[in-house]
Amino acid sequence: MSKEIERKFLVSELPDLNEAKKAVVKQGYLTAPEDSTELRLRQKNDSFFLTLKGSGGLVRVEREAEISEQQFETFWPETEGRRVEKERFTGRLPGGLSFELDVFQGDLSPLRLVEVEFASETDAHEFVPPEWFGADVTEDKRYKNKNMAINGIPS
Image: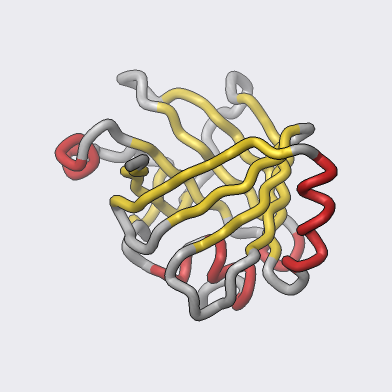
């Protein structure tokens, strides 16, 4: 089983992103708001993906398959009202861990979140975030992309 172990934080201030890779992302959700499992379509630059994510916070099931643009376009209309647009910056933290910093667009602007994935739960719990990270929202369901796609920025 594929598992994702990640922590998510608000961003208190933007770091230097000159060395980071930038991608334009749009994603929409095919599952109903009350479903605990997420089925997501994502376009990341010129690549397209179908992703299943289980419920959970720090650890959850994740399965992803690359799909064609035609397959993406076939199902995209079904995500109406459940979409997120963002710019994603991928970079390295001191110590070698990767981060993904999302700068949300549209209705979710000016929200910024950063995620870090870990090899183990122990590593995740021992992680000391850099100063530019804000509050830890890993277990706060309001900051799940699917929830924000439906309900907007958490209050």
